[in-house]
Image 1 (cartoon, rainbow, N blue to C red):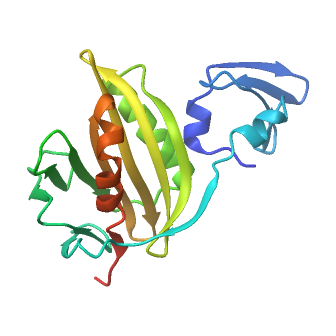
Image 2: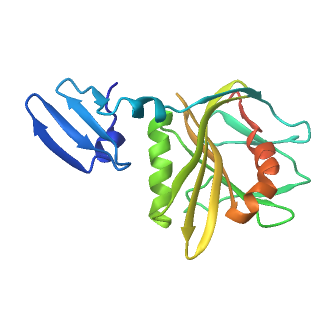
Amino acid sequence: MKLNAFFILSILTVYTCLAQKNAITEFGEEVILFEDGSWEYVNKENATKNEIPENPTKFKKDEESSFLLKSQNLNVGFYIDPKSWTFKKANENDEAEYKMESKDGNLYGMVISEKIEIPLTTLKNIALENARSAAPDAKIIKEEYRNVNGLKVLHMQINGTMQGIKFSYYGYYYSDESGTVQFITFTSQNLLDIYKDKCEKLLNGLVKIDM
């Protein structure tokens, strides 16, 4: 296993031991760093515990998601149900490309896209750090790889507290040679179970398109 930049940045404590180094990650896991850049867990059980599982289900666009939003930054689009969602282009100074709002309120969505290809494992760390910049207690509740309309995406639920409000991010993360997209829904934690089907329906509208 090779170290990536975000894994290196996540190391909090490093001490030297002969030709190798031991390190503690931000998640409290002890690893051994070798001179060739490879690494392994001190506790081998963590290697299995921290692997991201793959959901065998093939997820597809819902028939009611009939309106296609096209990204201006990379070759993906987002089919939405116009009866359930409103959307608008974000302002030039916003990080998001599109912002969405459920017509029955209390559920929101956004698309963050950029023209840089990022490995999904690195993207996972970026998403978590971004969440923690607003909510220091943010943590990953669920993570798995999914096949969505033929695309391999990382699905994550991140929970945190911001200004006393307990929120949940529930989204898809995808990257290819044309760039990277974070397709995210969010609401308060007490409403996520109520809206989860609606979140899934929106997120499963992610598709690859010809530019």
